[in-house]
Length: 339
Image 1: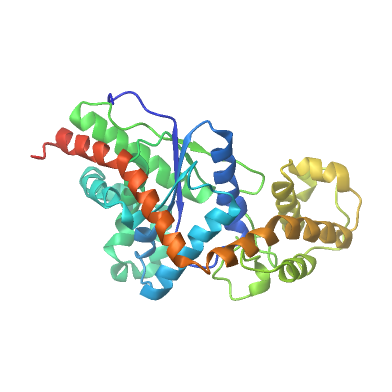
Image 2 (image 1 turned 135 degrees about the vertical axis):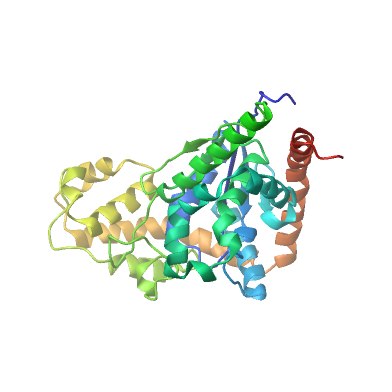
């Protein structure tokens, strides 16, 4: 492996903090499957449990949530033979490279991270050091595989920019071209799925109102009921996407339909314009059930055999370390570690 030759490779991950939603599926997992199936990249998908513990987690819940997330990946279509599917903490090179990057990144860079400010709030003194430094771990997650492309949502673009800054500074400081300058990939009509009860707010598993979201564990009846009861307005569907700007609740449902159907939002309006929203919501409910109920059913089946999930993750870690070990060893050589 030369310092300037990089295999086209994708890495991304989701925190196993419980409660997978439609937002996770449309904003991330569906795109993960599409990138796997396209065959343009090696694909590596991760349960980032080290990131999860930047805030306190119940140990048993964390184990359960990690397996449930793995089941979600598999049920959504991730093939553990065609992609590498891993649990972050089982690949120690993530944490080892993160320490190197802690020493490359600057305090000012971390302090400017929007998510740090949002999550720490006014109580930053009580936040964990891990929460402050976790963008360096995210950079290590990506660069320990020499990842060339990362599918990201709008809320993660700043962290990927930091990853690029860390790679650039490392390469400059040591006079090498060792780490790639990773490119973002933003795909899909609904990369940001909003609440079914308030189209101005992101769909969230922490929302106390369960009707605000579709959980990937919801059965067909629950999915259909939540869609039919989604907040809208009395006007019919317009002819253009621009006309949805002042109608966030309706725009959200159109975007969800478009993402589930693999079409552009305008294509949805071309077909449905002028229709009453009650009929549109029934069409969306039927589509959502057709797409999501099989995922829910398969997740339930997979969760009955946690030992098999653990075996898959152990095999994924073995495959991952075939990539990460030589990259970390070369990093240590560049930095000057005696091996």
